[in-house]
Image: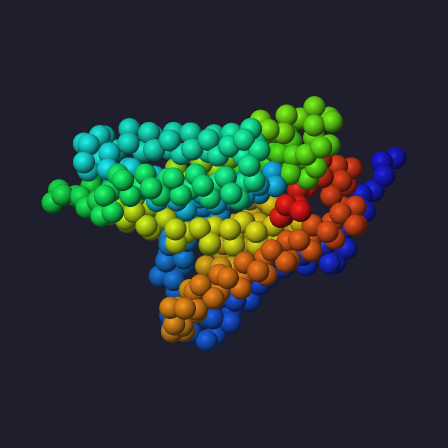
Length: 346
């Protein structure tokens, strides 16, 4: 006879699916408060379209967090990627597919650089990625000379702008990009040995070394994946904005980390995960949309993000400690791999 797996306590279900319940509650509250504007297809389209880039960037921020590192260069990399795409298309006359692939490859190269600086340079990830991010911001200013890149009278190729503007099954295409990326990351992190090794590196680097996992190599992998995703987000941002703004990327940095850290409290509490990140972005999107339709002032947005970030870090740390105390993060319990990484490094 095989031993029965222990039932999950009610507290675990609340922790895992609490954000989903909160999303439904916010939708209900705002629908009752704003019956004419909130529960409409236009609102759904707006949320799915406008929050696609923040969601992709949150998923990019999540991958290094799995290994216990933080990539603060995300916003700078996003800004550089989107102006580079427009520079190559508008000023250099490159075909848009080649320009996009070049920028995405460049994003991956930046990720490799971040990983090498952090692991082989033995520099704290906060400091290292802040330094490389500042350098990318300088490169962005040098490329644009501090001004915007504006297409000529002929505009951008329609096929390029359709990367963001088109629809599929009646929904904005960017929403499907998010779902596809989240599915790939979920498969890699939860079902493949690569993801399990990344979690071990973030949970206990010394133990990873003892069992033969090359921690430095896997951390570089995580930063590379993050840079690759940022490059894709930069292409999408260029298709959305259609004007190269050298400072626009910084606006996405805080929402990305709020989504990634808050996502560590959902679906798989105590460990960063792709599905939880998507749920967290949904909560933020619904909250911000409702606040905006209620007529909230401009300062309510940074207040909302800042307060949510503090709450996310606190809840993620608590969930990680509770998971370790309860012994629910072991490989035996999950049946799939090693213990999860804490949401924030100790």
